[in-house]
Length: 180
Image (cartoon, rainbow, N blue to C red):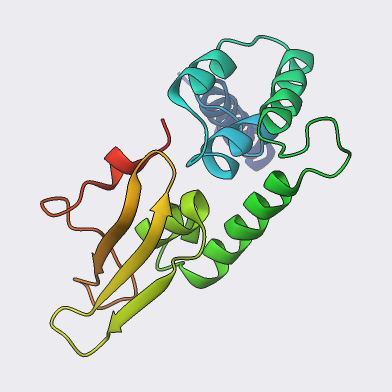
């Protein structure tokens, strides 16, 4: 039998076809990372959306329904319903930007415990910082948090000494303080 060796252009075409097929399969199995609705749900409102709202949002099937939901979500939190300027929404995005700028430690700041606290509850009334302790610690004091109570204190420690201050789960479970 006489087998001819495939030409270089044939092999290149075959490689590109395999790459295209594997890329298409990967895209079909996972949501697009640039999906603005996924970003809104997973990043923008991650700490302020209620469980039922999240469930309702994930059941929507059209972009128009999602747009209407997002519009209503912000309007429900507008201190002056119907007003063109929504100060709650503006403050939320300011907090989100601040958290991402000041609390990032190997991951976006909104994912950190300090980012969570700051986004959900705002600036603490005071922070006791103990950078020289072992491990370094911060104690955040809030005079009042709606739905939680008065004189709320969060202790965060930087076990890795990398700037990633976390609430030790055995001391304070941050999840119980989520607005869900």
